[in-house]
Image (spheres, one colour):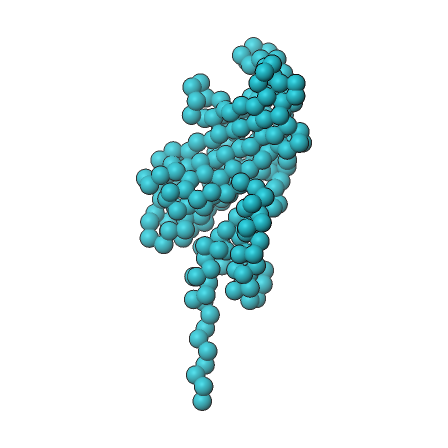
Length: 222
């Protein structure tokens, strides 16, 4: 909470103007990208891709020819918009979806999904980030937490056209998740600036009522 208030102070002196601007742009940003979602627990999540690396899968990995090992690093932001409930993370999960492999790899299959919950696991967390995004974490009411450098590794076709990473949290009330593209039109994406702005817009909307309360009452007329 303190982070966002400080950010708003620095960007524009008129804090309510920022909320109004966030409300105007949020619809455009959210419609353009499915990067943010509200879970049943009232948490807002954002995933910003910071790097995407593709390397050839080693022989004997069990994957069909044409598959590569992909490593995707991201910054995950979680905002607890509840004013009363502390969230207790019971598990973290990751899902990768891909499409557009041309020619299909293997033949007849141009899309697919791998996840950390499948057996055997198709997504491996190579770095939980800083601080670590892990089960057992808690998030206080109104708190924003950034998990920088959350990194996963997985196998998918080398020639896929589109790839999307979803990071989810399960807590005592339900699940929430956020996702973002790490691959579009066959091009790995290094940093999603619009995604970061989209999350700020969402938080701005959530805090609109609170920010109005910061205004000092007008001096009584003499």
